[in-house]
Length: 102
Image (cartoon, rainbow, N blue to C red; front, top):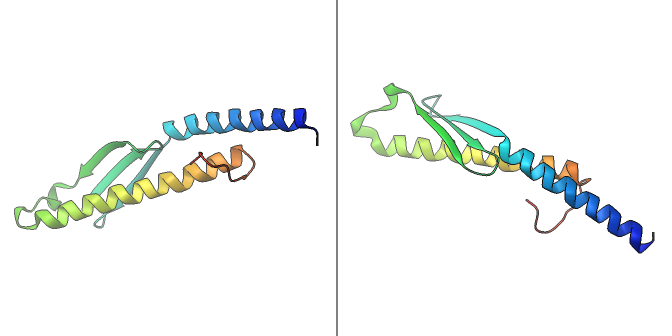
């Protein structure tokens, strides 16, 4: 393969990866924890968009449990976002492992 063609392919993959990263950033991922007592939504670029807490989960005696449930919910949503983002970007660049990308 000649160098010019390789450079063209690399530029194409770079453009595709950039587009895929923008698409991922716009995606939303949701998770629930505590049997549905907490629901959270995050974006593909790792921002927490919302946290919804069932009023029945609000027990002043169990604040630690609620905090742990919220943390678990956010972590689950972020893990899903990361997994889907990696798959989306890998598909865009042809499943080539490229340093510097998600």
